[in-house]
Amino acid sequence: MTTTATSASSIPHWDMSVVYPSLDSPEFAAAFESYLKDVDTAIARFQELGIEKKDGLAVDDNTVGAAEETVRAFSELSESGHVLMAYVSSFVATDSRNALAQAKASEFSQRGVVLNQLHTRFTAWIGSLDVDELIRRSPLAAEHSFMLRKIKEQAVHLMSPAEEDLAAELEPSSGTAWSRLHGNVTSQIMVPVQTEAGVADMPMSAVRNLAMNSDREVRRRGFEAEVAAWEKIAVPLAASLNGIKGQANVVIRRRKWASPLDAALFNNNISRGTLDSMMSAARDAFPDFRRYLQAKARIIGIDRCAWYDIFAPVGKNERTWEYGDATAFIVEQFGTYSQELSDFAARAFRENWIDAEPRTGKRDGAFCMSLRRDESRIMSNFVSSYDGMSTLAHELGHGYHNLCLANRPVLLRTAPMTLAETASIFCQTLIKEAVLQEADREERVSILEASLQDQAQVVVDITSRFLFESRVFEQRDERELSVEELNQLMLQAQRETYGDGLDEAQLHPYMWAVKGHYYSVYRGFYNYPYMFGLLFGLGLYARYQADPEAFRAGYDDLLSSTGLADAATLASRFGFDIETRKFWDDSLAIVRTDVDRFEALVNESVGAATA
Image (cartoon, rainbow, N blue to C red; front, side, top):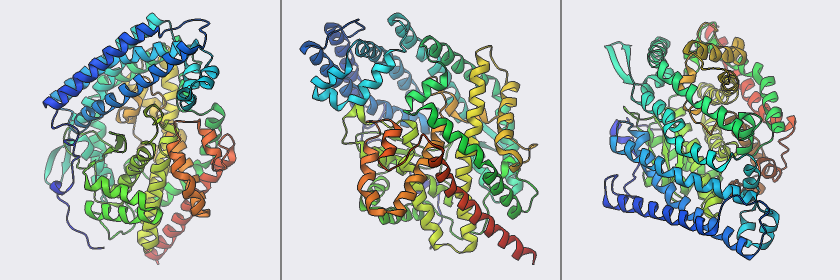
């Protein structure tokens, strides 16, 4: 493949002008004001309809009419509010120093309190009803039956109306404020890094990208600079984490959940049995991942990998995968699955849905957010490598999932975290297998290692995060945790999971500061769903390989149905029983095969080099 040099100017920023000309435009102001008026109208109408908890409420014609009217009102508010918030968030995520965007985000958060209070009242009202009778009498309710039954269950866990109103009013100044502090501080920090040309100040996202450098000394210097930078800002970040987990513990207990994990399982539509089966299978697979890390150390030429070697490139890959090359390859390979998937990716690139350039003030990592019906926006911090292309393919999978959901009613366009990774893992695997088919031995080493690197993060590292968060929740119930205590909990979790796959003297004590997933009050345990998504996606890919036509016939419908049933029900459509160990063991066997392939290639390469 012929490659061209990539300059910063050729890596795109997303185009939000198709929504509103700018944050300070009359069009945005008018849309914002219209939304606020619609919220006020809904408040008044809820009052007239008496939408609140009412013991023994009969399901008559008036009740059915009120239920249908409120569902329609929530649908309209959800659609318009989502577009506004996504628009504002696009500016905050790519430039946290944008004062106007920060102000608008704060204003939207404050106004959102009222909508949260309306939803709580609606939940309490639905909890007063015979939902099965409502579904029987109303076609609209029948269409939203899974959602309404979930709300009925959720109603059992509501605090008193006064307590729920107070919690909603305090949220922008408590959990949301702590989360915003973490995001702003971590995106704006500049890190001094020793380079060959001297000390250079770099944004944290660029420093963390040094972990992918082929020079071990560069990786080591970047890692040490990163850890030193986290240490300097650890006190406010520890305060943020303590504040968020403390608040979550109080609210979850007041809502009579047995634990934060039970609340998370409910929100993610899976059972404790499913989680236990998956985590048990993951633990039993740790020796395979350690075997992979040990093979990686051999090919690098070291005794054992340090933390800063986890993302080190290996093998010889002549392809640098500049941005233009990566996008063309994705469009072409997506077409081997379906024209619809290929056309979707081409549209995303053509219409500038992607913000790919790393820069100061921009958040680290990558994500995809839905915008308007079938439109999404993708943020990444692109590097000219297979990993950069793989990340784009992954996030485009999320966007394709949003496309499949677009024709559902707005309140049913949802994907719990457990199922949200389904399409992204599938698309990422398509790209990996396509690259492997064209690769020589050295390239296969590189591509297999990059894939195993991702899988180790999602199985091994995610388990460490799960263990860490479980212990933080438990100990935060007693008191606040110091920076040193958080560091020790993080190191303990890493030792338990990575074991002898990594040098215990070279771990990362501040990973609790790095990952924004910990900093959300009502999204506790924002970790194990990634493992679910990976292993579920691999299981689906295996099914695709076994019977491509049958798979294609049901796949888009599965993606469009993630808001219509729990994970076990949807998995059963493809013959999967996710409550048992076998499903998870079978998916991890796919990973084990890749470890075997990688280890064999490494042994060949090392043997040839020493011959």
